[in-house]
Length: 484
Image (cartoon, rainbow, N blue to C red):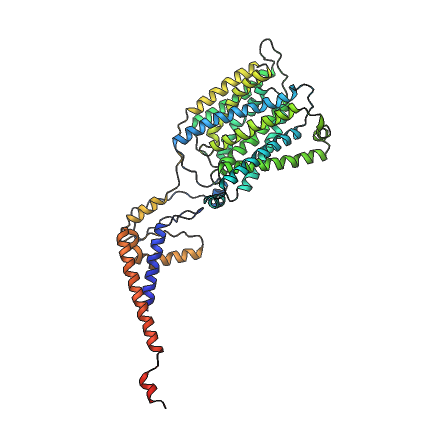
């Protein structure tokens, strides 16, 4: 009986030391400190979300420093400059001499085929760089489930692109950006529904101002307001509706991207998304061709497509898809979708500038007025107070509670996941922790001394038990002499 108690004491001491030194496993949170026996200093625990809802919302938000937020805003300005060239490259396809008319699905397929090639080359380079490094396996484990997240984001992106291309080909470059900017009101709404309401009244005001600017632009241009000395493009209701629908889908994409970037690496997730976009666009092309759509005509006249058109499609997706998308993913690691959305209004400024420089497109009165309000919305969003997000309760706080425990308090640190674990945790609280409290509460040298003394005692008891069993197994010499 004494030997069993000594073995139990050794196991408790070793387990307490190992648990105190080891960090919590990945993907799990340490058990909340459970203070028993009349604790007056116990603080109220925060409200917990159901596991499924917390997983849908991406878990707890990570802590973001002010320097990281400033860097994210600079990356957003650069990425939106690239996104502003998206509509200019598309409209430049029609400016090519003797150009071949291309269908919407075919343009999407060609663009994302180039994007697939760029992403594949980048993944090959990253794989070659990671070969032979010791951090390769942990990175693969951390990105578990990134394929499903990338497929979801790719599906939303392809749907957005199809609607956007359909509408962009019917309005001017600057007008397309203004109508697409209706996502300024959809993104904060999606963020609130996803549980990411980490922005204040100024962000709401900036998003509302951007949306109002789009409505004002449509109202001015629909009644015939245009720039002096230039004929304004006719207002297309279907094009405006398609761009608004694409903005709604894009808002969902931005919110889901912020959630997925909490658990997956930005570059890895972005490259997987690009690969899936190429596959989904190929499937859309096959469906459109089988139904006799515009893609069938484009495929039959594939040899008549001008080299300049191929070059514009490749350059456009490299600037507005690959480079700008990578910068946006890197920025959204540190800033939420709602806080980043007002900066998308800068796309109007760059789209109008690039359209005027490259295509000599007239800038209508509505574009000037709406673009001015968009810039004002971006400046208003910059005045939002950037406070770091509240981090989840750190493990250090649990350790502080353990260090300040009194003899009347027993602290449980073991994670409980099932009813059996709860029963075992209760046994640990009542039996094991009283033996190992000195190891956890006191300093490390005292714990080492007690562990050494316990180990020596157990070894001595084990040696005594082994010696006693061996003496019993040996034959008695006096009895053996009396036998014939």
